[in-house]
Length: 137
Image 1 (cartoon, rainbow, N blue to C red):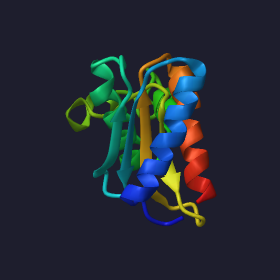
Image 2 (image 1 turned 45 degrees about the vertical axis):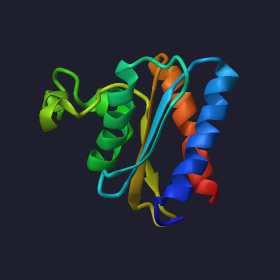
Image 3 (image 1 turned 90 degrees about the horizontal axis):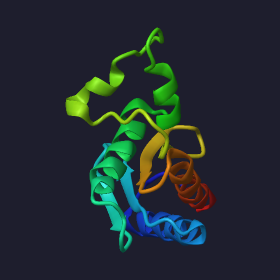
């Protein structure tokens, strides 16, 4: 897969929503293209309102930095090479898990997914389901 189209985003979101239902945590799911443009967004019933922006910012962080947000967390801690990174880009950089870049077959970042609504671990589990769908297309 090379492009994050609306149809692709819908498939990613559907799989992520299935996983969120499986673990019984309502989520917000955002999918962006390689330019960090929002392609698809879904807020499940009863998902936290704050998770709307958080999910989108996780996808943005993953695309713009070409890293998952758990790794961003690790490298932005005091004493690490990117300490303070979470204070950049008008606060859009998220420094906890739940965002992943979407990569083509050559390893190039062509988009991102961001999920918010549960713990960082739950968000990562749901986002990984979306990444796996993307990789299978």
